[in-house]
Amino acid sequence: MKKPKILISNDDGIFSPGIRALWDAMSEIGDLFVVAPDTERSAVGHAITLTDPLRVVPVHRSGGFEGLAVSGTPSDCAKIAIKSILKEKPDLMISGINLGSNVGTNIIYSGTISAATEGTMLGIPSIAISLDTYMSDDFRGAIKVAKDMANHVLHHGVPRGTLLNVNVPYCPPDEIRGVKITRQGNQYFKDEFEERIDPRGRTYYWMKGNVVDKDESLEFDGKAIRENFVSVTPINFKVTNEAYMDELKGQFPNV
Amino acid sequence: MKKPKILISNDDGIFSPGIRALWDAMSEIGDLFVVAPDTERSAVGHAITLTDPLRVVPVHRSGGFEGLAVSGTPSDCAKIAIKSILKEKPDLMISGINLGSNVGTNIIYSGTISAATEGTMLGIPSIAISLDTYMSDDFRGAIKVAKDMANHVLHHGVPRGTLLNVNVPYCPPDEIRGVKITRQGNQYFKDEFEERIDPRGRTYYWMKGNVVDKDESLEFDGKAIRENFVSVTPINFKVTNEAYMDELKGQFPNV
Image (tube, rainbow over all chains, first blue to last red; front, side, top):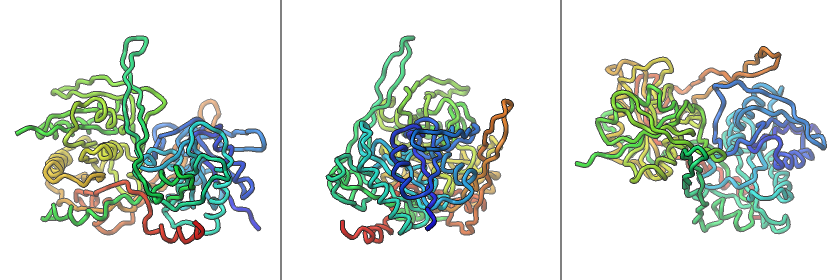
C-alpha cells in the first residue's frame, strides 16, 4: 500500500523538541516533508510575509530528520510548501507539537493553528496539536495522540475548510482519560503591561498576563484538558455573525 | 453633551495617509486617542509581541494630530492602549483607513481587522474600515463612510464579541450606491512564489498572487464593493464548526 504523504510544520521552529517528537511519531505512518520556520514564531497569528523575500534552507537533525527551514511564519511555511516546494499535494498536514495549549480565545494568536489553517485553506486535511505544558520535553502522551489523530484523519477525512485542533493534557500517558470532542471555550489571558526603565533611562513595556478560565463543562477545550482528556475541536474560519445579520439589516432600512 | 472617546489604530502605521484621514473624520465626532504601529505592519494577522519589549513614543503630525507610536503589531496597540495607557475605556475603537480592501478569506491576514478584533475582545465596540485601492490617497468617500459608521455604532452599539468590517468602494463619493450588509465572501489570493537569485548566488522567493473572486451575489463583501456599495460585515471569531460536532462525536463512539 502506498504510504501517505504528510507535511509537518510548527511555530516553535524547526529546531524545537516538539517538531522532533512529531517527526518521530509520523515517521511510522507516512512519507514526511518538514517545512517549518527557521526560528520560533509563536503568537504570530496568521501573519504572512509580503514585504521581505523568503529563504528556504535544508536542515539535517540526528536520526534521519530532514527538513526545510523557512525565514517566515507558519502560514508562509504552509503556503510555500504546498504551492511551490512539494510536487504533489500532501494527504495530511500536521502542525506541532506545540509547547503550551491552544484553547479558548487565544487560538486566534496561535502560529501552530495558523499553519494548519493555511493547509486547510489550500485543501489539505490538517491537524494542529499542542501539549499543555511549557516546561517539559516529555512528549510520550502527545506522540501517541498524534499518531492516533493522524490515522483517524487519514481514514475519516475532515470537511473541507475545517481543521482539527488537538490539545493533549500533560500527564503520564496511562492517565489520559480519552478523547472529548469539544467547542472553543472562553479561556483568555488577562493582559497586563509591566513598565520598566532601560539602562539609558527610557521606558519600555513587557506584555504579561494570567490565564483565566471559568469554563466548568467538559464540552469546552480548556476544561477537557484540565481533566486529563484529549480535546479535539473542529475549527473553521467562517467568521460572519449570521445571527446578527437581520438585526443589522434592520438598522439600514433604506438599502 | 459629553463627547465620546474614540481610540484609533491601524496596520499601515501612524505615519500613513489612511490614519490621518481617519483622524480628520473622527475629530468632528469625539475626543481622539491614536495608538498605532510605528511602521507598516500589514498582513501580520493577529500577531502579538511576547518575546520583545514594546516601546511607546509620542508622535506629532501637522494640523493637531497627536498620537502614540508602538513598536508592535495592531493587536499590541489595542491591548496596550486599552489595558495600560487609557485611563477610561473608550466608547469606540476604529481601525484604518486601510489602503486595500479586507474581504473574503483574506481577512484572516488583516492587521486592520486584528486591531478591531482585539478591541472587541476587550469589550470595546469596534470598526475596521478599508478603502478598495492601493494606489490613491483620495479618502473623501471613506471619510464620509467612517463618520456615518462611527455615529451608527455609537448610537446602536454592536453585540459583544462582534465587530463591523467596513469596506468602501473606490469611486467618487457621489457614485457610492449605499450600504449593503454582507457576509464574508469567498475571495482569495491564488498564491505563487517567484524564485530569484540574489547577487551572492543564493535563491530567494517572493510571495505573489492574483485575487480570485467568483462571488456573484451582493450578499458577499467583495462583490458589493465591486458594485460600488459600501460593504458592512458583522464579524465574530467563534470558530467551532458546530454543524460537524455530532458527526465527529460519532467517530469516537467510546468516549
